[in-house]
Image (cartoon, rainbow, N blue to C red; front, side, top):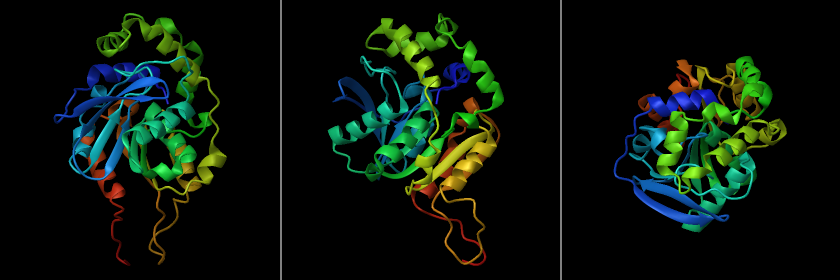
Length: 285
């Protein structure tokens, strides 16, 4: 999901770090989608947040590329991917990812999404479960009621003028195929914030293993993350002789929304074992 003011700060704070990725473009649902491939191993698709691009995802991409073939995408209207005459919705973004996989010949992959990319990843699991092996969703929400009160109070104040002349606009113009397309993108992303978000019934049906990751001072509340874990069948007591549930939750201490992606080594340590299907051993295992 979009966390507008926080993402604007992140564009300033994140330092790009990449290990010689291979850039490419492919046509997906009428847009020219830009993506980069790096690393070797099982396929892993990386989805960025709103107003972001591959570079502003920072060091997590090369970290994950140490063990996976990472396909980092730039979503509709972001970075070097063209925009089209269509709203930006999480469902549309999920369908774009599925279309990308078909276009480049990926039958099934794991997904790592952050913020808007996490909600798109969640919709990917809901709409295209056969294409997702495992999903890591960083700062995700399945219901708007799970957002912190401060964020809900800020939403009505959100307007296109907020972004004029900011580093967010500068970053857009630096990469975009149409440097004048920023106002249209802002309008779509503000509209995305006001789209209904109530997916509890869909989440309760998910069988794909999911790792929820968020900060303890993130935009979704910690209580919301726990509620999502329980919907996914997690949050039960271990050491009772039964295998642990497939889905997991990691809440990073002292971590705001923008600080989340600035901890790539910690994220890697959490994500790696989950993607490999490893569970820490207890004294009764």
